Length: 222
Image (tube, one colour):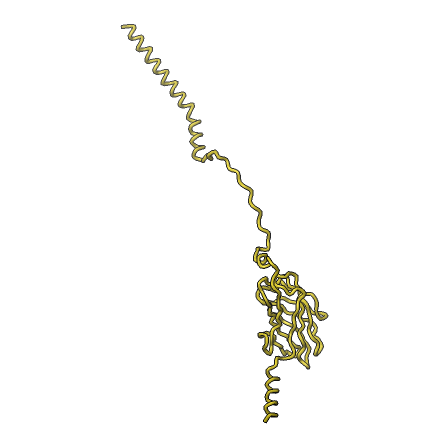
């Protein structure tokens, strides 16, 4: 009975243990908010019949595909950005040869404590290892643990990347009231009417003078 029980426990332990092959990740600056971080991945070769042909990574929130650039990897391999991450590929590796490569990330999220890089490892025979699950499962995604951000990093990351525009120079305005088009027209009309007014006054004065002299002459005649 004890032998059977021991065998059952051993079988359960073996079936519950996670797969031995996995993807490892490490960084030269594993700190939230760090810039120009070189991140190194090692995808262990699990197949005994085919070599690794490509490695696809889904980036965690806060890191855009455009923020990732190629650093180094297997001979002939390179990086291509995808909609949600990137793919590294090249000439197929030898059977049982791990795919180790490094990329540079422009900046890590300032408020993150860990970053999960879900990874698909594709072999030349079409088999795919899916390292996309939570830690402690059979297919855990590689997780990069981060130290807390340096003081002030979060505030800096929230600020716009471009420099703030300088203050606009003060505009000096004239305190005198501006002349409107209507005022200008009135002024022009007044100036053009002035000679006619003067002429009319002269004519009226002349007529009054003539009438006055005629009246005086009639008075003297009488």
